Length: 144
Image (cartoon, rainbow, N blue to C red; front, side, top):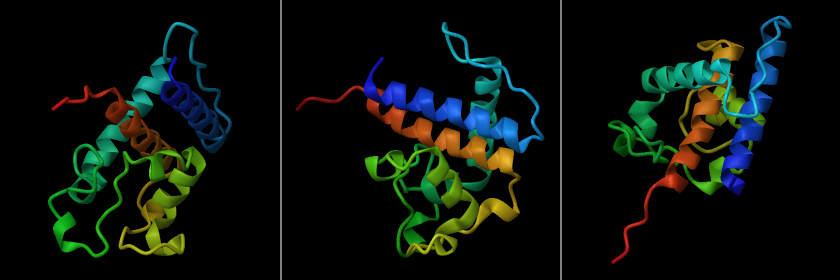
């Protein structure tokens, strides 16, 4: 397992545990040693759906900050696949999704999604955001 894959696995595991706490203590299935649990896969699917609905217009399909509205925003949307975002970890990503740019004391125009999304949804979209960096690292590099 690469360093990025290990970090992503730990991040997703932490998000699943936190989601269980937010969902009134309902126990979530733990990931098996042979692969992600059904819950993790559903979280990823829900996170992707939420991302497409609320985030893609600014951040773009791959999270690079190149969505259809990005050119009209100052400062431009963050590149979610960049190490600067990927190194934040699940709690900080969730806080930024929930609080938005100004709620976190950051420059930017990203709204606070914590009033629109529930705690579990914030965790699901945050988990998906963290998966964007892993997908970026797995892309084949074109050699000149």
